[in-house]
Amino acid sequence: MRKGNRVNRDKLIGRVSEETGLSKASAAKAVTAVFGAITSALKVGQTVRLAKFGMFVVTERTHRRGWNFEAGKPLDLPATKQARFRASQTLKARVSGGARKS
Image 1 (cartoon, rainbow, N blue to C red):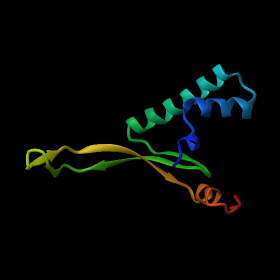
Image 2 (cartoon, rainbow, N blue to C red):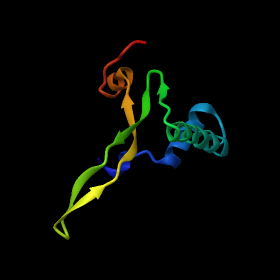
Image 3 (cartoon, one colour):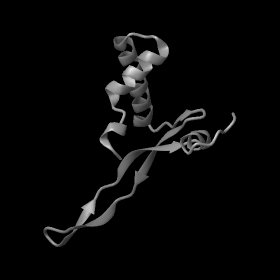
Image 4 (tube, rainbow, N blue to C red):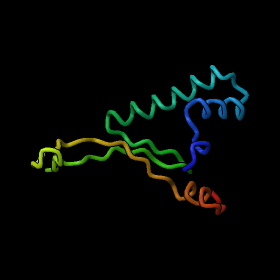
C-alpha cells in the first residue's frame, strides 16, 4: 500500500466536511463522537452493526503459551479481548467493483 493511498483522521474529517457542508470543526466533533460511541459499545461487549457497511465485534483470545525467542523459554500469554471489523457483503461488493443492490 502506498502512503498516499491512506486516509487518516484529518483526511476523513475533511471528506465528511465536504460531503455534509459542515465546518471542519463540526465534522471533527461528529467523527470523534462516532468513534467514541463505537469504542464505548465495544468496551462493554456490545456488537456495533452498521447496515450495508459491516459490524464491529469483540473477540476473546484465551490464555496460551508462547515462546520468548530471546530467552529461549516458554512464555505465558494472558487472555485478551480484541476489537474486530467484519465487512458486510454490500461493502465487499462495492470495494471489489461490483454493484450490489440493497
